[in-house]
Structure formats: C-alpha cells, structure tokens
Image 1 (tube, one colour):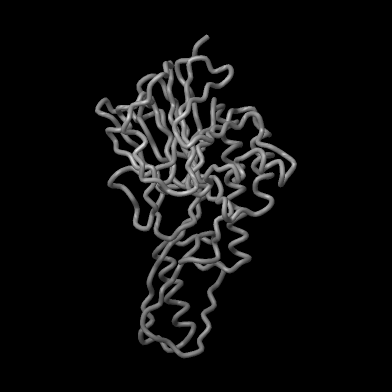
Image 2 (cartoon, rainbow, N blue to C red):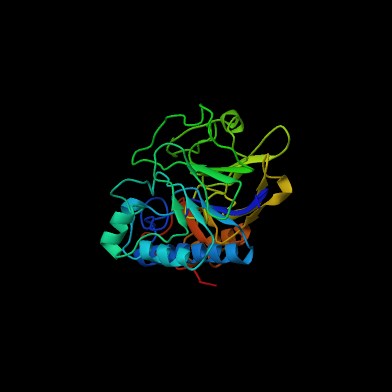
Length: 323
C-alpha cells in the first residue's frame, strides 16, 4: 500500500571532530576532547530518540563530521551507531563532510581503513547533482538529494525545476545557503532562494549548513523547508536553538504543528565583559566575575568566555569556584 505521509527525524551540522582547542573559545586540549566526546554522545542520544519516536526515516543534511579533522575512531563509531537501528538513514554530504572518491563516505576508503563499509540502512548521496532515492518498502516516497563536492560552489542548483519524479511524498535534502540569511563568516555554498524552493516538486526540503534552526513557510502556511541547526552548541556567536527536528510530511508540506524541535544538550556558550577598573585584589575581580555569572544565569556545564576590561594587579591569577 502506498504511503501518504512520512515521519522523519532531521539533524545536521554535528561537526564530529571539529577542533575545539583553537579559535575564539581556545579550549584546553583535555576540555576540547571532552566536548568532542559529548558531541558523539548527543548523536547517539538522537538515534535513540528516533527509535523511541518511531520515525520512518532519519535525514542528515550534511556536516555530520569534518573530513579533514577526522579522528580514527569516528567512522567506526558511526558505522556501529547506525547499524544498531533498522531505520533508513539518508545523508547528503556537506562542505565539511564532502563526498569524493577519497573521502570516508566512499566504501572503498572506509573498507581500506577500517575493514568495514557503511551499513545497508545508510543511504548516502554521492553525486554532485540531484539524484533520486527510492527506499524499499516505502512505496510512494521519493527522496532527492545532492552531495557537496570538495570545494564550496556558488552554483544555484534549484533554479531549474527537477523533473521525472512522481510521488505521494517527495522529500529533498541538501546542504546550502539560503539567500539573504548568510551568517557573518559563513561560507556561501549552493545558494538558493525561498521561491526557488517553492517551485520545486519537494513537499519538504531538509537543509543543513546554517547552525540556527529556521523554516521556510509558503503562502498556505505550510513548512516547505527547514534548517534544524547544529545538534549541539560549539560556537560563541550562534544563539540557537540547537538540536534536531521531528516532523511529519504529507503531500504539500509539513503543517506547523507537525514539526517539533528537540534539544540534545542544554549547555550554552556565552560571551560576556567584566569591567575590573579600580579593583585592587584578586578576590575582588573573582567576585565581579561571579556576579556577572549570576546575572547571566550561568550553569555549571556552560562555557563562558569572559573579556576583562580595565586593569588589575600584574601577575594576578584568577581562580573561580566550580560551584
């Protein structure tokens, strides 16, 4: 019997193995490793949620990991994680986990390095143009997706309407940049507009690349595309919300009440300033910082970047309580 709706879990931009010890955060190596492992734990939690919520498919819209920073245990971890479930996992590689013949989405590379290939329930788009996926036992469902190449592309992939597909439910999946919404410092790649999405045959387009969640809603009030945002926070300048989305798509789109956001990690990454002008003792500075933490309602697992302004005694070492 042909299906008329699909329940999906969507996530993207996990960025497994992203270096956390450089950049603005400048985490110590051991803390960066803790954060790296927590990203893996959050992904495992997401897959468990997919089972608990009885979703039909899992959509991963790119940047699952960072190809150029991969640690040796990450691909085997993903193989084992996805193999634990029978749910189809559909992946559209992004600019950080791009597909090439030499990348780890290649079964040849995966087998050569780890003696294993991607599980049968994992479906990876490996062409650098839109192609179509038909899943066994999902009569009436068509999924169209594209793999990101090694380098970012400014080619507008959605200007031409996709043809040759007839479906009860048509889902698209890609990693790209919505016009006029590019965050500062973000790479422009595979750009598109709202109207270009709306003219496509997709009932719903799962998007990755932007780290804050947002939706594209058509004139009927139906959600036609959405970014789920980063699975977890790992940047100072991104406000969130972070996590994943679970929704039900039917012919025409996703009803507003049928797309829900789930938080996988309640940590926040916060930047703040503290003026230490006139403070002559270390403990005065420490107290000023603690008061700012109270104002910001900082929790113990939050990461806070504190910028001090003014001056305080040379050689001072600031020590804050863990409480």
